[in-house]
Amino acid sequence: MEKNRHLIALDLDGTLLTDNKVISNRTKQIVLKAKEAGHIVVIATGRPHRASIDYYHELGLDTPMVNFNGALIHHPTDKKWDALHSPLPNRTALKIIQTCYELKVKNIFAEIKDDMYLDRYDKELFDILHGTKEDQPIIIGSLKNELRDDPTSLLIHPREDHIQELRQKLDDEHASVIEHRNWGAPWNVIEIVRKGMNKAVGLKRIAHYYHIPQENVIAFGDEDNDLEMIEYAGVGVAMANGIDQLKGLAKHIAASNEEDGIGYFLEDYLKLNVKTL
Image (cartoon, rainbow, N blue to C red; front, side, top):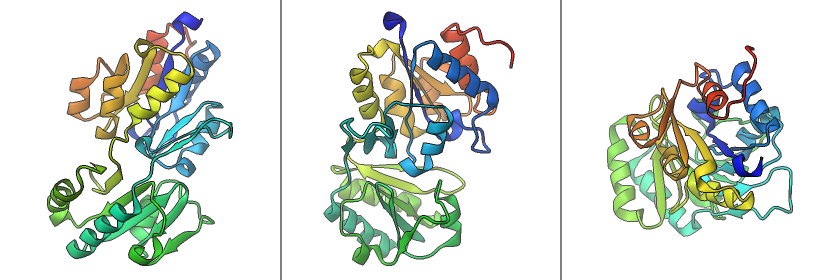
């Protein structure tokens, strides 16, 4: 098996998860079958740990996980595994927060691993912050005063009319130290992590850990935060519902997240012979 063992990297939203944020039964059975056959399955997501760990357990994983688009690479069940946390320098974060205040953005959300900071209370934003448990405390108050450590990521909720202006400012003033991505409609949240952080960084590290060659890395994604990972993977797979730029880069295109795209692709590519479920 060693020679044919693959590392399978799964993005969550729009990829492994259906639009209802669940793993379909068929895809789940095929992913479990791939694990049984000796392949290594990992989650690589922009989400924080707290918002991905339930899916990790649902698939019975015991592998490292890539969170915050590579800003946190860690092993949820093996504390001895050498985690890599690459936060934004606090000084940079505070400059960006000041820029946001000047542009009067709707809100700013910061995370330090699983600690959450919200600039001001906003029910709408509360509802979209993935995996926020009711009992999970969020510190609410001016981030300029509250944020004292280096944040893993910043999420900015801009007004519709200044998204371009804000992204341009981020490029002009902070391009050398940050990466920024747009979540796209309907939220248009801008996510900021440290420069050089992306899912491929995590995937390379995990592939090296398991001695899996690049050509045996299969990665699935749908958005612009998957570009580096899909480009790095020997078998880069874009979902049918993915953005055109990613499809242009990918070596394969799978059916959509609503049509068991991951399941059907793995079944065929790895010749898993899963009975009709």
